[in-house]
Length: 258
Image (cartoon, rainbow, N blue to C red; front, side, top):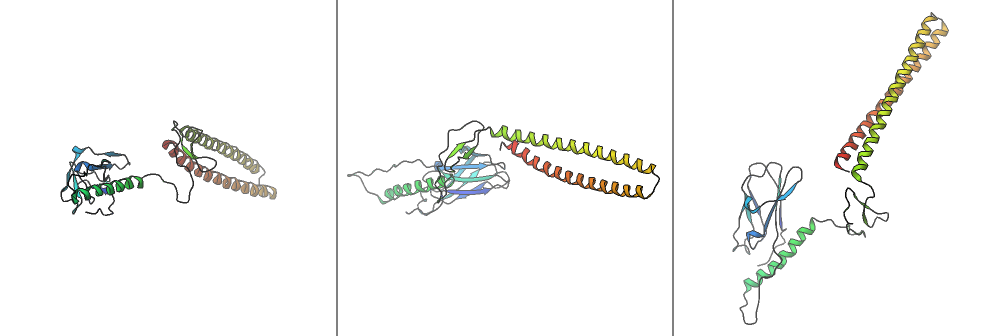
């Protein structure tokens, strides 16, 4: 029989905490051909052991009625993902001899295997990193280096390791930003205290003048100065809030090692 253009993957099924049966529509030659992978809500993935599920499939009927289903021993937790794929051995078990029989079923199975191998490799390749069709970059990875990140070189054609420890770099950036914000906050507090003390002193001096046009003019100028100082302090406070928001992002990046 022919093999349809069916992906060698049934996915992604999302768990609801109660469902245990999950179907697949592709042909298999043996239940051992199947692999089942689950991922939790954090993206941590693992392959299920064969004892964690059972397979229902009519192997003899696969050429005409491919597919089947797997049944989990325990329900897939809500939000978890499940995928079913195949990992058939890349072998050619059929042998045709000059004196032996030539059976269409054996030949079809042999050709089906070759097609399934191609589909299996295509499924793996579909989850792999690939370059753009119009790109000319070399995607060969450099030798791994502890706490370095991958980056493009100056030509944009070759991947290389960063020259600095990305984790320490992020942490240093966070500390520097935090120190800068603290310095600004202390400076603003000092300016505010000093200016308000001067304004209080001037007001005391004005009250001693006991009115008069000169005193009124000075008081208006002093009020204008106070309003200007308050406006400046508001601007600085808004700037601090923006810096605090940026610092939170830096902390998140530092915790993520980015």
